[in-house]
Image 1 (cartoon, helix red, strand yellow):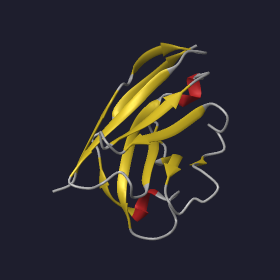
Image 2 (tube, one colour):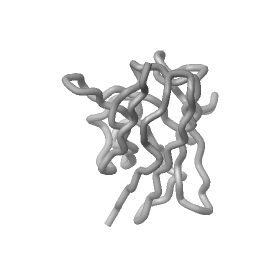
Image 3 (tube, one colour):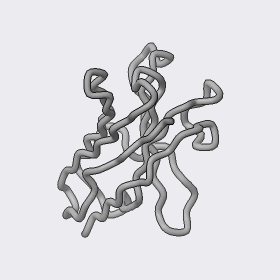
Length: 124
């Protein structure tokens, strides 16, 4: 049974930083791992992905490039999302995902397994 548990969310002021963690059991984080976010009334949005398929390094959504960094620790079977220079528009519930069904890692429908999410609120 695959389980993902996110943590690290909270309330932060604009310009601040947070680091989210996603502990995975039942499946190695060596496989493609993705982070997505969903704000109220909006569709789930691609944030970042890390994969051996990505020969050029991790991939990021346009809105977070240069501010967010995805990484993983295979020994701890954990994936991280370091978020810097946070903006009010980063406010959302953040989810990690695995079990990619197609090569398109930026589409949330292509992932089988999801965590419960961790809420990030950025105050301006």
